Image (cartoon, rainbow, N blue to C red; front, side, top):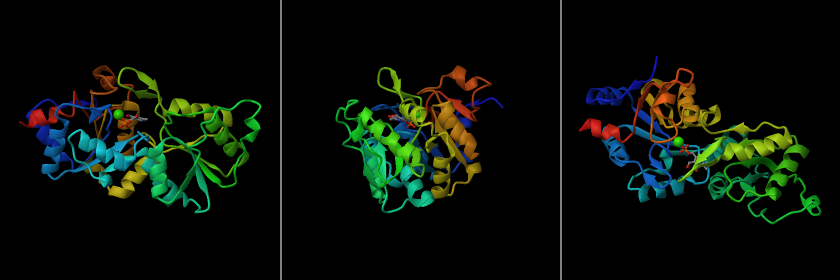
Length: 296
Ligand code: PLP
Ligand code: CA
């Protein structure tokens, strides 16, 4: 069935009545960069007042959940740490709960403080953050694998360096037991003005050099979905995922067996939402903020 446009007050009432839990992608749905999308705070308030459970599911690994709470507050919204599920947090939970990461091992992190904070909060020591010094062919031999490194964790890293890539590469190729985990593999990163290379684009360097395939946690992949399902005990029939990207958010919802709402304030436009070859959302509308207007 093609996606249904939510356009009237009746559509709004039927939509909101049908679900107990709403999962929201953040960038492109709640905000764009640092600018909140019109009427979204009022929409979230309205849903909370109606007793709905809200969960924020983001592929952005640069920011820890605590910093996300600060971002919500700065933009005039309230969100609790427990309501936020990022690909960095999912990676930490996965290593702790599913892998049972050994306490004497460390994670070699290509990524920023968002990932390191989440890993360290679950008791996983991290290395790699200082590997930014320039390197040359003459000094490459200094880069050695370490028996302490039990996993290479890859997320967005605005200070990515050849030294970091070389370190990750030797750990992954010299030690077959070293896990290879990526927070997400978004091909692009929507910036303020243009679209820039995303985590997946940087990650492809290491996939190519090591010929190893990482386990990718973030949307649309199932490890993050399993973590979300387990943590929140979702009833798929009463849950709806709201996103702006068909290949990540909407596919994630479809894989989880939940309904999906695609909004047009981020990556997807109306033509792509209605294309029969794209992942089919259950609903679409121009902006999440329109729910507030429809309810008036
Ligand atoms: N990765 C990075 C580094 C980002 O900055 C963003 C958005 O800001 C994303 C991924 C996508 O985040 P979301 O899943 O909230 O759209
Ligand atoms: Ca998004």
